[in-house]
Length: 356
Ligand code: NAD
Image (cartoon, rainbow, N blue to C red; front, side, top):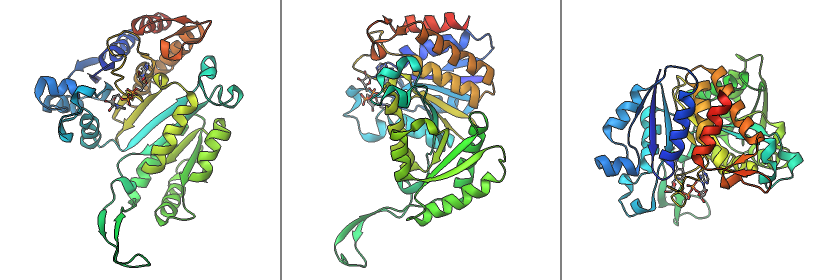
């Protein structure tokens, strides 16, 4: 199995190096090949997504991505900025399903803004459709308002739309993910107001007929936002469209209070995926050896589970992360009095040792 390693910029290379060490410690024979992306791609080859990097990503079974972006590239024209690399990879690889687990390890319950009893032990998975919805629907733009009380004024407009196959494929991802977890899916929509999401609800209900072992619940997005903050532990898998998912996944991420802990996956129709931490390149701490590598290490675990069909190895990595947290080891971003502060490499060492 071939894994493309794209470390990127800022803390990307530091955290990715630790995830690679963890993968190497599993005793599997993965083929890993590294390439420049983002600012590093621009510096080396004049483009944030150099052709060789894209070719490597396409030829691999999975991509492990660090992070891209650095303030020094902010003056470049938009098409050459580091962040374009991730958009380009999503498009070129057809990554339509974004999986973001929000897990709060009991040891880190103090890091959340919510009461520990509400969030301690939280383990939910948000699945966001990534390539459709009002973010991509056409027509869109600014025009002369054609009708209604504002006729003749300028107006801005976008188009919300979802094709049946787009809904079906994300629903399958959600039900299959639930089969590997708590066997419950909450489909979040706005079927009471939007035609697009009544259609969404009908199609998700139809796909559900193929998954008798999974429970399906429908919930309006306003209620889902409220429940995420009121009683987040009642969810298992949440599946929703691009815009609602954008908002709800950030809300869920903040329940855990620690951005350095959150992995993510973006999958195509064949479960090939790109795996990356939910955070950015953190240029403010790059090169200091203090970045938290656990989100990237946990992203590697997701890669094993979803793209490489090695759920047992994913379990091993997740158990090792739990063990180092239980030992009281903390990078500065999750440090609390009474625990032991460690750097990026020491945290990587601890996970590798826990695996052994
Ligand atoms: P950021 O996530 O990089 O950093 C936000 C804060 O969190 C910073 O204080 C940072 O030090 C801290 N932080 C982030 N990851 C951490 C970790 N692993 N350990 C410890 N602390 C961590 O977001 P930002 O500052 O808004 O953006 C910085 C750059 O990253 C920008 O160029 C942005 O465009 C880019 N970015 C890239 C991605 C991506 O590659 N997918 C995602 C978001 C932002």
